[in-house]
Length: 276
Image (cartoon, rainbow, N blue to C red; front, side):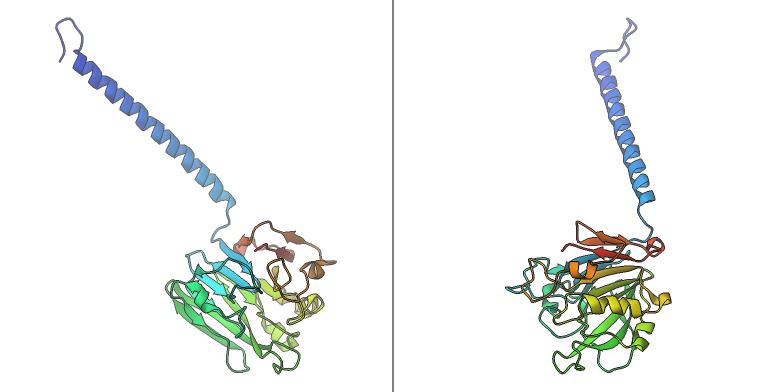
């Protein structure tokens, strides 16, 4: 209440002080939100639009995450004495398996009740799709063998090209020999996930030849090597360094994730080495 002396009472003064304090706090919050908004905007300018990521989980296993949150696992392995990575289990919407070996078909190590797409049947290139919780996912199957004797030693293998956010990603599974020219001409992918460790798959020399034999118009923008010797793999494989010898434009990332988008793929072919 306003008093005769021309001032406010103690209660009114306390009320005004409280209002002023609240106003100051609101201004500080607004200022902080504005700063956060500017930071997010600045980061947004540096991030590629519709970013997609590939995370290397070890051996031949990758987690692809699409812009809409779709999670795809390729060739999940069973950890143990031979494969000692601890990156599984993890959650996914779809699991693709290239062939029925323990280090490629451990679908029970994937959570989330995913759709399971097993190895292909038949010897013809297939154009297929699978319905997921996030929509339709399209892919192509290419028949191949796990060895040079048309599968008599290790059986068949599926080379699979998946389209995610407009980016075509080809996973070669345990390819055991060079693909026929007819097939390599049909594989038109932006990113290759290719084995290089040899012994039970193509080695560094054959992986290099497969790349060289692919028509220029079908050359990938990014090559990510897989299925090679590391301290976590007790198999008689070669180190990735064998494949990298003499190669140009090699980027060794400290982490296990490669983030990209269709419009930000390199113009000059790049080899990206991920550390699971």
